Amino acid sequence: MTAFETIQEDFASLDEWEDRYRYVIELGHALEPLPEEAHNETNKVRGCVSQVWLEKEPRKNPAGETTLHYRGDSDSHLVRGLIAIAIALYSDRTPASILETDAMATFRGLGLEQHLTPQRSNGVRSMIERIRADAAAAA
Image 1 (tube, rainbow, N blue to C red):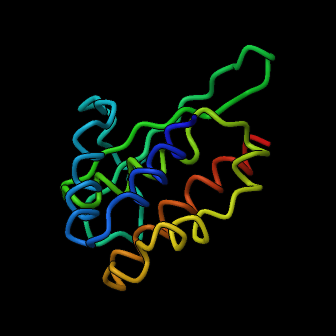
Image 2 (cartoon, helix red, strand yellow; image 1 turned 180 degrees about the vertical axis):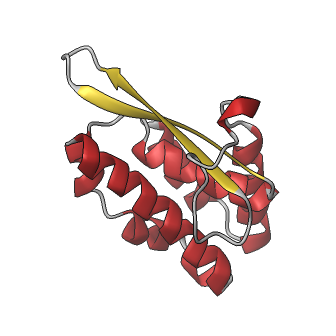
């Protein structure tokens, strides 16, 4: 089971939005640390109300294909959790696989979109657009 499938399963078991909200924050606490030097203008995601940084690292998978590994951080606990979900969905996948994935539909499937403010939803879109742009450039 992938990290994202685990998140989907956990979300399905939580009935109340408050429980899901706490779970998203917990996901943010488990993010791979982002080195202080990676909190820079190059990694900063534009279009987010909170401060958001995404760092990509091209890697090779066992088949020799290029994959993109992501680390991220934010000054908001909730946004750190949203970053964790995006990373679970996209990190360590090939650029083609990233481009084939409809993240916004996936986030809607978790029921997140209806509980996020318009500003947070725009921030999620900005993160997804950044990851997709990285994938397009690497493809």
